[in-house]
Every structure is written in C-alpha cells, then in structure tokens.
Image (tube, rainbow, N blue to C red; front, side, top):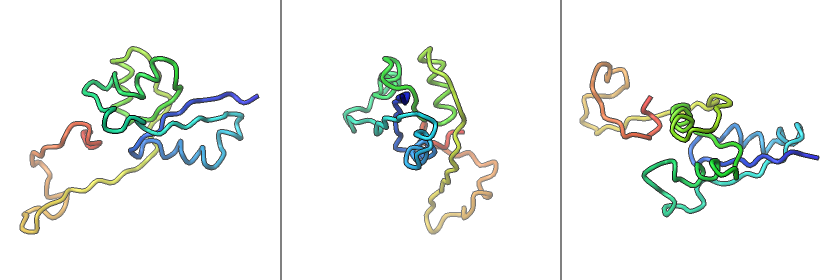
Length: 128
C-alpha cells in the first residue's frame, strides 16, 4: 500500500522539482502517493502579516501537510520561529533576476552596481 504525502505547492519557482517529480511519476515509483495542494487556496484574502498564520504554515503545524517548499532563508526562519519542522533538502532551482532601469540610466549592467547601495524589498526572493 502506498504511503500518502501531502505536498504544498508554491507560486514561486521553489516547487518546480517537486512538481516535475509528481508529473513524471517519480514518487509513485517509490511507492508514494502525493496529494498536491496549490499555493494559498484563499488567494489575496489568505495574505497575512505574520507568515506563521499563512495557510500552508498552519496546515503544516496541524499535521495536514508533510512537505512544502520555500527558499533556504524562508526554511531556516520557519523552523526557528515555528518551533517545528525539518529542512530536508536545499532548493534545486536556479532563478534569474533582472534590474530594470530607465533609458537614461548610468547603469547598464549588474557589474556597474558593485559597491553601490541599492534597496530591495523584503521577501522579494533577492534578499540574499
């Protein structure tokens, strides 16, 4: 009999390896039945200031999920703040980022920003 694992999706790129593994049948080959939940079924109404009250975190805390993907720093923060959970792997995805500038900007490449202070919003995925 297959063991069921409930997996929370992510609207970011963090769940791509999991999604591919589900679609390709890799979990099934190992005797695992995966129930894949999409990210935040409540949509905009599900947004909260404290991540501990978000849908997927509450599901994990109450045992309704076994696994959900987040970035490395998000995983460290959640394990520490929620007091439970376990980091079982590192993010296997590679993402690109871009800096958009006006046509008349002095900056045209990322190397031109070396040693230049910049501002990045928290949880933009680029705060590393």
